[in-house]
Length: 183
Image 1 (cartoon, one colour):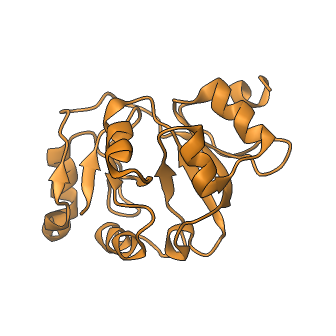
Image 2 (cartoon, rainbow, N blue to C red):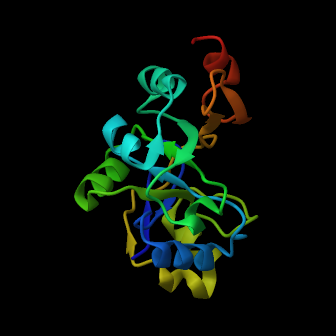
């Protein structure tokens, strides 16, 4: 099952992040390079600890910014290699939006947190536009949670928190200065 769902930034595509076969279907739908890892949504810090090695820095970032528009990169645990693209790391999100959090709680496992777009194509803000972009592959999306057109938003900011200092990998909705200057 592939779910198109809204988040606090953009629409995402979710599958059971612990199911390698489901992750493979997601790569197929997106036409995504299998050397690019996919982030996950967790329901909170306890679930984060089940699927990633949470560092003291990650705990500080979680307290300060999550739920919110930040993705924290950590060493992965209990996740399939294709999700991490063999890197051994995973980006972890706790979005400030009830839909992905409900999906994770109902499943009892993390779901994928990847933008709902064809690889290397623009992200779109409505399910109708998104399904049109996928064209013949749109049928692979088995459930759509439609909240209409989402407001324009930058994607989440991605921070490597495996060490003692944060490393900004992608600046997005949370300014780098907010991350670097508040720890």
